[in-house]
Image (tube, rainbow, N blue to C red):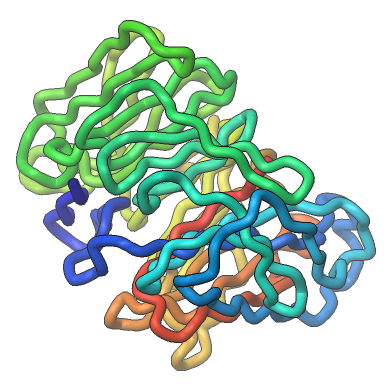
Length: 343
């Protein structure tokens, strides 16, 4: 079952947008070499990787070797960026600097939302269930998570013990916010509700145990709902961004606006933070999906046109002063992109 769209663009749904294909996901793991050090070094020209689609008939293999792009900062620390691309076929691949794909196994259903977790990846699938992914030595293994149904969006806690789950009927559907907290290992969960708020975005789990998500308050105001997972108490503050995204360790948050991104500490969501260099040239597009790496030192973001068609993926790093270090081209025919960094 697909997630229903929110009531306004500022509350963009983590589920499928209207008109997107009912199935078909190309999952690409792009091996990028970026550094969290050398913050005083001058920013080099961005590298570009063209992500080429694999034919739908190509059978996935169990493993593939990663070919890494040129390191823009001189470091040898490789990090994988997972890119989910809807283009009418379902396959899983590992792309190198030349854009060639080596096949990997895909989950049993197309991916609706994907997030970094402490021990790998966690994904909400289009059938409303969830799966865990582990990337090891050029291959990825998918495992079923705790039983779910009608799952629209999720977040994993930094300690790797719990998940925060949001159902499709609680996302922009006029019903009170209800966030389910379940153990990763399975077992009984609990539901945290806030009758005065309506969920309007995916949850982000912070290092101090709070869970933040975009919501609609009284009078249709855009707010940020902040749920204390220890006390079940929910508060809200004004929110003018279109979305927020947390690193897997929960210490860093990216606040996304249509044509800007700010990086702030999770402990101070209302702070000014640091601006990411987002392209402003005509035709560059506006910010859509965003992902921070597990420790908040790197960011990837998708730019899309006015028709919500993805244009490109940009990579920026704290080491480069949050300026662009790499640029990934989007395959022709792409209708939706989801991204996450694999730890």
